Amino acid sequence: MLPEGGLVQENILDLPEDNRPELINDRGRQMKAKPIRRLCEDHGMPQLFARPRTPNDNPFIESAFSMVKWVPEYPGRFLAHHEANAYFARYFNW
Image 1 (cartoon, rainbow, N blue to C red):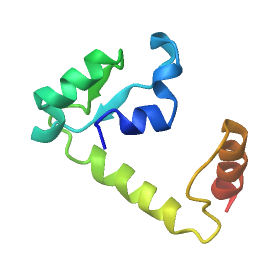
Image 2 (cartoon, helix red, strand yellow; image 1 turned 180 degrees about the horizontal axis):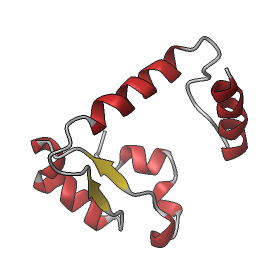
Image 3 (spheres, rainbow, N blue to C red; image 1 turned 60 degrees about the vertical axis):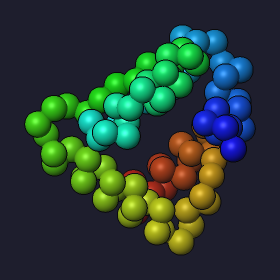
């Protein structure tokens, strides 16, 4: 699969450039590599990095994502914003 495969599959490239999501990642070598940077530039997607010298940012969000995904009712994918909003409204109350 081409690197753009996920962008095409999720219809990201059909969005106007100013509506495309921002890619926020850590400062790891693979995320700062030229192919990733070029992919973002070629498709008009801003690439942002986590704050420098704050190693505790990433583990907390990774832990939260992991916990969300292990809840039995987690659908694995949301087809619309209202589905995600409804799911997380119940999740946060839980």
